[in-house]
Length: 370
Ligand SMILES: *Cc1c(COP(=O)(O)O)cnc(C)c1O
Image 1 (tube, rainbow, N blue to C red):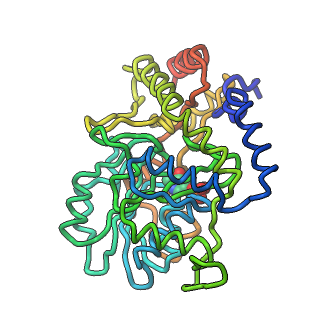
Image 2 (cartoon, rainbow, N blue to C red):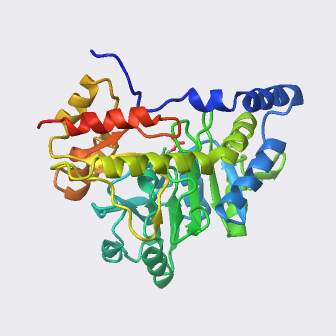
């Protein structure tokens, strides 16, 4: 194996950049003697709600819980249908399944990889309670037609915003645009914790209140359990760390955008290589830089041989995974999602990738002979 020259992601760099702040937050946390649902959580919730231009933020334990509790808060359960993209991380589907409802997959637009709004209406039935769209790879989904459909059919538009913290749709920040938006702060995300964390944002006070009660054993007042809730509280230390990273997020996203534009110009015109497309409504935050190639596996090998680590997001679409083998889906059920799974490749991108590393990646991709 060749020496690893460019890891897919540099997890130590953000700590080294802001070491004093993280260390001080840790000391403050240890000395406070308060570890769950305290001042750091409240402050993070206020700061992140304001960042998203949403009235409310409720911190939870992880992104899957954010999705699951959001669906429960909307009263979605047994017998209900929720429209999901066929091309997403499996968590989007699992949240629907865990709520007791049925995920109804709709194919993506292969140009943006996000759910194709033109295919959504034909999937709506009398059982449909919500559209759960995803802002995949750092790019907002096409909110406007989706909101229109949701209003027309009196259903909710929920958003899985695990991958697009800080992205904008027509100049407006995601997080405050759907009826409820769900965020993961898993370490690899643009706004990543040092462990597990998640949140919902919404401007619907009732939905926020329901999630707040659901995350804490169904109680508002200690030992008064109004409903059978969950334990999905955000960790106080993670909230403290996230507040530090949130202040840096726009700068880090801007650095990602600069690398993306270097890639877009440096990789333009390479035969068979399909580059990311940015629609006019979108200001993406480049969680991932996803290219497509008919000889994807060979391209990945070629890059690995040069010490460049890449990842496939995602190699198996949810409908072909073991988790959904009871659903009677088969190869060919969602051909666009399957084509994406066969052809996509994520190149390294992140706020701490250097210009030299980006140039090396461009040069290595350009030297690939299929
Ligand atoms: C990461 C991710 C999730 C799940 O978040 P966790 O915090 O790992 O539970 C959900 N949806 C998408 C699209 C993701 O990328």
